[in-house]
Image (tube, rainbow, N blue to C red; front, top):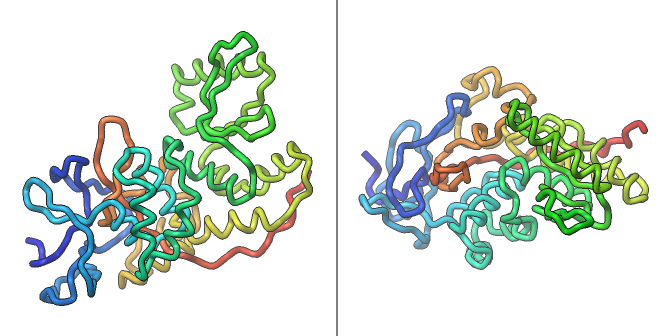
Length: 324
């Protein structure tokens, strides 16, 4: 039974029908989130985390009477505790699925409310053309390093025949960067990828593929490689910006510690894997599980809303350039 006056931040389909809550088995511990007016009765229930609002907030009512916050309001709520990288992933997905518009996000961010300043900073980083969470991560790495890129770039050969649509094209070059998930090592997909790579080589294009672990741990090498391609000197501030984004996200321990403590969950209650600064999963879709705020993921055939919460952490020192 839901608290009277509470507005749920959970899973629902795009047409407002209520769906089964989707929580991965390896999700971190988290409370149930709800939004309420300050004049509503204060609920006293273990495991419930309530955000009380002094003023009315945007919401909608589903077909079965469930009150839910709007996508823009939900993203604003995410920005209170999430790291920049986490919110970008969620907002890219919402924009790609046309659940929210940039105008709606700007309206939500143009308020004197918690999370609004961060949302205003995040909006210029968004791009609905990224087709997965890790593609968003790949793009933001390049944005943080001041590398000019264009997502979903179409490449044709000298005869005008379409070859590929690349995750990222480094502007002014003949190199593309792409995220390679585990599916690319399945036999049938691997065979298609090899043919695709041959076509690119024959047309004088370079393709660099990266795994999730490389995006998280080898940012210096990726940035240094592009610096050489663009014939520009190494600047450690580019890597420092990327490392800051990682450290404040739930992809690293500093970004996981703060929200869990804010939710009154002590480290002693966390599963061992959530106490280690290591990669949680190669599949970000299973990592960005439901923590109560409603953001729809883009898995084919599963038009459901999901959410991921994170918080700012400490910044890493500016590293030295990697070896040649």
